[in-house]
Image (cartoon, rainbow, N blue to C red):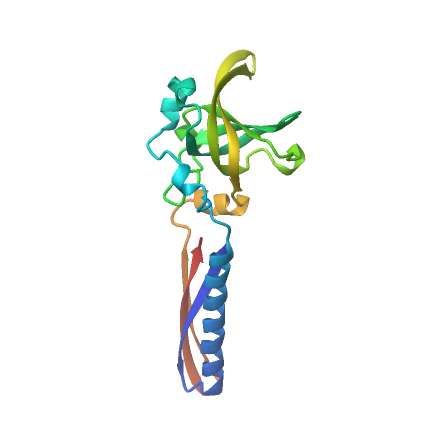
Length: 202
């Protein structure tokens, strides 16, 4: 979501200036409310169960060793397949940032994993390229095909699946910082107005 906050300095605006300031306060309040209503990436009920020390590399090297451990992994959906026991997601692992959001650079991936969503999830609702953060319980590994080669996938049972907005990824992958400053000066009605603002993406 991108919120644009405008800061206006008015000379001789009177009633109009007060209205602008009130409007700014409403916009800021709505932005804070919207951020507060967003579902958490990691639900509070699951946070104490997560093994923060367990890395994806460790899982790849010895997945059976960590059966029953709960981890947080991020990545990009490559394929979704309906099974009798739920929906299997093939995910390209991507490191997580401080917000538990997967990075967008595929070159940072350390491999792939399979996550089983036991509640039915129509594969058509999970588009290829969707970035997700998965909280899951390690169940070991399975050997499956990756193109023509056999590949050993670490496997998880999904406890919580968080999908990230595609537009957010586009903003973050754009060159340079994804915030913007704007400004200008206007004359009219006997008043001089100068203004500026910041577009903030979060």
